[in-house]
Amino acid sequence: MAAKNHRQWLAEPNLKRSEWVDSRIYSDQEIFEEELANIFKKTWIPVCHESELPKAYDFRTVSIAREPVIVARGPDNEIRAFLNVCPHRGMIIERRPSGSFLEGSPSGNPKRMTCMFHAWQYDMRGNCVYISREKEGYQERLCKEDVGLRRLRCEVKFGGFVWVNLDDSPKVSLEDWAGPAFECLRKSLEAEPLEVFHYHKAIVNANYKLWHDTNCEFYHDFMHYHNRVTGFNDAYFARKNEAFDHGHVVVGTFEVNYDKYEGFESRAALSFPHLPPNQWYMIDLFPGMNFNLRGSAFRCDIVTPLAPDKVMIEYRGLGLKRDTAEERRTRINHHNSIWGPFGRNLHEDLIGVQGQGTTMAPGAEPRRILQGRHEDQTIHDENGMRHYYKEWGRWMNRTPSEPESPFVEQVSVAAE
Image (cartoon, rainbow, N blue to C red; front, side):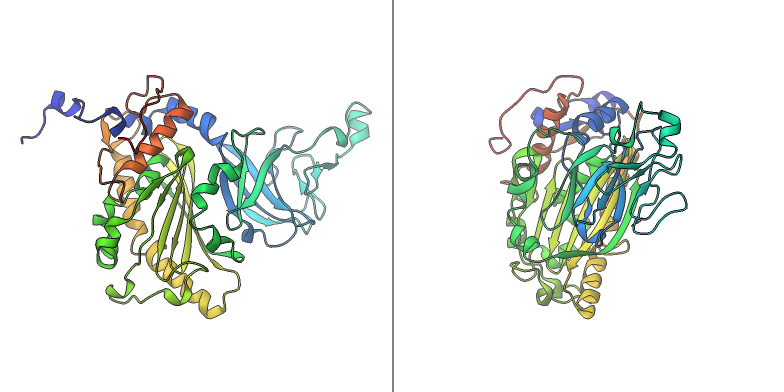
């Protein structure tokens, strides 16, 4: 068949509307702003892991849909989340990515969150405990009891991850939101405390949904030499992409043959509790978070959309908190040889989405992105993407294949 002229190139594919999306959903600024407002400000977002706040008064700062957030462990050992914004003049309170409030800062007292602008102070429950020159400035018109930080819905769940929701009245509870999808790994993740042993982040010139897409299908494993060598067998191709409510997908398990790759060996000795040796599960959560347990190491990807064509991805590697020094070294080696910044797989995935981002930059001509493969919902099927974009359409009230049109419910992914 000859190459296409412009008219042929733009013609609709001979597929159902649910089997392709319009590339504008990856590049349009208006759509991006709606995603922040309609999805990221209303869904449960895993922002960090409890092991990153090991002691009372430890904190981490993050951002959700451009809103600055601070997560802190109180003296009662409770982890809470607040907007990282002083109610006085809207100043950001804490600029460090992480640290401790146990010791005082140049502008504040120990055990207090202090806004450096005018020295207003808050305790670990978000209560305002000090206003500089309170009586002199406000007389009796306003006092510290009248103000405080904006508290956020916050829960620690599913292996110790800290989840935050900017919406005071979420559509569903965290348990209902993610519990069924996590069921396949829950015993392994909650058997004993976990601990982050690796962290790095990347800012990628691609839409955040493209990172989701490459995580929820394994058709692209032809790009991964390591996966071809250690995994391409009947059990590998039989793995299922199982769809769950709220747009989530779970990729089923099989046994990875690490010893078939030169320099690698079985990871059975450090398998997570209740996980059969060398097994591999992946949970891909809407709107783009990923949890990946591969034998001896657990990986979590948290996406923060920065622009239609830019996303920050935070990668965490986790092991068991009780690991000996030798076990931890082995887990780190296992994790980083696959998923570290110079590992076998991760950089290849990033090349894929970066290449897509290059062709779908804002202003690029709209085109159709296909997701019409059907292989009985196994891992080379693209049902995970079809399921995801159906959920995206609900939240956005836009049809993914025709984003200027309102979303209309169609038949289920399984029925297609």
